[in-house]
Image (cartoon, rainbow, N blue to C red; front, side, top):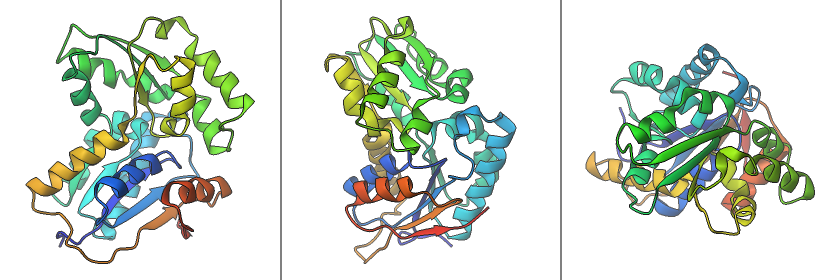
Length: 267
């Protein structure tokens, strides 16, 4: 049975969800996390909805088997294509959260936001989850979306902070869909890794939103409201992957500032 000392479980197709895990570590330093990166099946963005659902349910079962008090879908593609199915499957066995709803709530409550751009995987953009979610609650906000499918494999392969990544980023952000925006939602948890490059493209004149801190703050509220905050006890984060990659370990170490022990487990 879950209690305050049970871990927080979160998953993504690869390293992207580590941006959310890093924010949780900063905002909820006493919480223990179990992270699953489905590196054998990445990217999720070009998979069918049915396949994304199957992967997500299997990983949710794995996290439930670890007695996680929270299952956080730290992947925009899974959040936009499989969340309702995950909700029905998990039911009341754990708190369930995604990385999209807290960002939508943040956007609609920001009086300075008028023209929003969204970038993400093909599956996330095709789902129209962001524009439908924002405009159903505030139809005065304009929302345009652009699929940027090369960014996830580029990041997973370690092409960051170099000429290759800058060229790909520039090519996408120059598209007409993103002209005139005042806010850009990074609709993929991988993208905060290149947030500075994205902000630099816009000369830091566009408010670039990454979900990490927003989601971590929402999670903190949920744990307080359900009396499931962890007591001050030693904790050790655990990292699982479906396939070992050197870049995963490198980026995980970059975020957590220590050697990360990865356990390979196929689900």
